[in-house]
Amino acid sequence: MEAGVPSARSRALAVLRVRSRALAVALLPAAVAVVLVAARATGRLAGEPWAAVTFAVCAVAALVLLLGGIFAAVVLRAGPAVTPTVPLSEAAAPDLYRLVRDLADRMDVPPPSAIALTPDCDSWLEDRAHAAHRRGGIAGGPQSAAGAAPVLVIGSPFLWWMRVAELRAVLAPVVAGTGPSAHPDIADARGFVRGLDAAVDVGGRRGLGWIAAPARLLLRLCRTDAAEMERGVAAAASDRAQGVDYGLRIVAQEQVGLAYAGWDRLLTRVALPAWRMGRWPAHLDAGVVSALTELSRRDRLAEGFTSRLGERPACDLLEQPGVIDEATSLLAARLFHGGPAEAGPDWSPVEWAAYPEEVVDRKWRAEAARLHAALDALAGPEGLPTASGGSHGSAAGPTASAGSASPAGAGSAAPAAVAPAAAAAAAGAAGSPAPSGSSGAAGPATIEAAAAAPHAVDGFAGPTLERVLGCLANASGEGALGEALAGRLSADLAREERAAATAGAGKARGADAVPLFPLQPPRSGRDLLADHVTAMVCCAAVDSAGAAPGMDWLDGPVLLVGGDRRSDLAPRVLCLVEDGDPEPLREWLSALGVRTEKPVRLV
Image: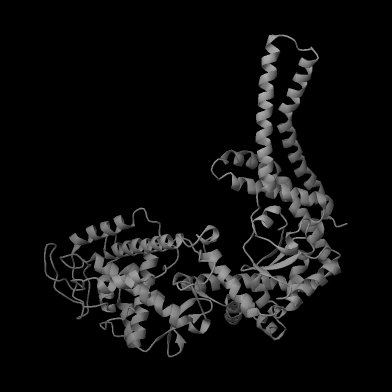
């Protein structure tokens, strides 16, 4: 017997003792009532007070039994949470099932009842034999039968990045966990804890709110023992798997960490911009191989990992890897972005080859349209308020007074109008949380608003980069145009995200309605302004300097000039946004041949 099994079993018995004590507390009033009724029937408790006492105790006992019965029924029948996964039938992956069964036979443990994939860098066993799962249609087949072995959930990035031998070494301690899981006491304790957890969720329903309090109390009482039980199970599984590819497992664990790093970068830098545009990359798992290969090329710590690519990849264990990759990619969009569970006209897949044109270019032009719409909104009858400091002839203009009705050039100053503009932007953003990430899904409203808005009386006709440079020059102080524009962008983007969420609320339910695992924290208005200015610069470079949109596997959207990535744009944009100094960016644009006075195409 493995070292961790006795410890896990003793902790499981401690959890079950909590259940027994709760049952005893529920039965105590009934026991007292039985004693009183028996004493009254035999004449041992004669007299007037005992009749009332007996009646009161019987009433309390009946109420406690009723509530206890309802609570027990909820704990037994409530469906524990099930991780959203892509089911993998044996016909779709016969070699993978054969590998897992071989592992189970070598370790003398029951094989998992089924295999499923998750878009995450982790693997675990999940019990899906609860009766509520069968009633709700969540589980079917052998894994839902009473007493069935748990389901093996495998992270899909592992199948594409790892080799077959590495995957077997990583799965060995996971599959070994089916042995301790089959112990009756451990299985009973796990079922009790999962039932309490499901009862807490049921307590949020109308009319059943009282159930959550006792369920939480019981969870607190058995929390320590349940955690120690799981540690004992893990220790027993690890001890049983010692003899299976132990040396290779050490190397495979390095691949787990590398896969996690590449998967995180791919989701946050590459997939997230596409999701916000209403598109979802159809082959994320294949993309993680490209991302990790690029990481291996850049990072000397990852040198030598790409030499493994000549060996057989674990995805060869699948009959149709492309179909499985597409299904897990759609699930990733649902879990990490809150997208619909099915593809549709407004939620369509995109191939990696079409990503630069269909995602990157659209993202840049949508952000440029939003930026110019915000500039138009901040432009009052007296002209767009900007700070002084414009030095280029095309942007220069005479200084206008606060009450002047004449157009103000890009280098003009109207301090009295700046504060109201900033206040208006702040008021528009009040009560609106800063949107997460660099940009939201660009609906047609943004571009249409930019096209239909009247031209600002600021000395520029149309959406030009020169207008942006002139407006932000020396406009980074408190209350200046930079702050007003950043606040306006934050408010506009939050409004678009709320509108998109409202539009999709009728189509999505449950886990599809909101992101379960948001990828990025909210970003500041300054960050959003820098992203929008960068998008405007990239649009101008594409339209007038022959540049092209591109995609980097680790950094997402990039600007390509002559087929080479230009990574020196970001510090110059930050210099403009944070310091109000356009000269570094102007020099960069001049060297590239970008015409800042040429209108930019927004659609």
